[in-house]
Image (cartoon, rainbow, N blue to C red; front, top):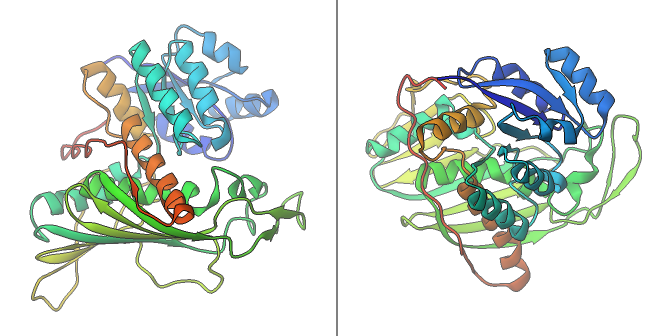
Amino acid sequence: MEKIKVGIIGTGNISNAYFHNGKRFESMDIVACADLDIERAKAKATEHGVKAYSVSEILSDPDIKLIINLTVPQAHADVSLQALEAGKHVYVEKPLAVTREDGRRVLDLAKSKGLSVGCAPDTFLGGGIQTCIKLIEDGWIGTPIGATAFMVGDGPEGWHPSPEFFYKSGGGPMFDMGPYYLTALIALLGPIKKVTGMTNISFPERTIGSGPNVGQKILVETPTHIAGVMEFASGPIGTILTSFDVKGGTQLPRIEVYGSQGTLIVPDPNTFGGPVIIQRAGGQVWSEIPLTHGYSENSRGIGAADMVKAIATGRKCRANGEMAFHVLEAMHGFHDASVQETHYFMKSTCEKPTLLPIGLTV
């Protein structure tokens, strides 16, 4: 198939992975980038051998069919809407939007224009989680009955040069890292039916520990410790803990899935590889399973590449906007349930993404 020309808007740190990996994928060709800071766009363009544009210029280029939106979360919806209005398909970094209302606007506009929306994370397309999905679908742990997910740590202000947005609306551990865990769980077990949760701001003020703003104080405006419970439409009950408030480290697993015939330890959903570890019912030994699928190294951008192939063949892309919206609603649902002291019943649903065929290249 002919490669689709792609432009990137937002040239922060994460863009390097997309530029680098974009050269590997046979379905797309990253040809340009743009940023509100035109000098940063020019530097990134020189580094990666592409054109530097202003945002309006990249949206006006008729040869560019897909925009990869790597702006900060608060700008995700606005930039995606601009790209869709310009007739471009959109693949956006997580989360899809900060609010459910903006997320729905993005999907509705895309539908009205016959365009596609995809959304990170795409780590579930890596060899590690794809192997886990295959094991579950092949019955290795029997019928799934439950799952746990843990993402706990000390927050990013100690190392990130501009960590303020992590503690504003649309930030916090649930909106920053929750998409990796919830997307992985949906890929493993399918959509969520209802959630409940409890949240807290353990430390109302943070101090920037590196970079030009070292010592500057940040007022925390969003929960930084969230404990949630979810019921999946297929029956399993899951728990999730996300926190920026853990000061002493952790020995918790990233994700475990429990079945009627065994337990599956799922690798870190912020990576693409293994290990994948299983213990069958009645067994006494944990066994590491060789990966059945490729893309086990850093393959950020595989979701966009799969999206391009989906557009060409008329199928739904795996890292699609409907799943991203479902994740967005669930994240808000945990917060809402805590405030309202109740269960939150999901209003959206999504399809469980189809397993990548073994040996497929994108």
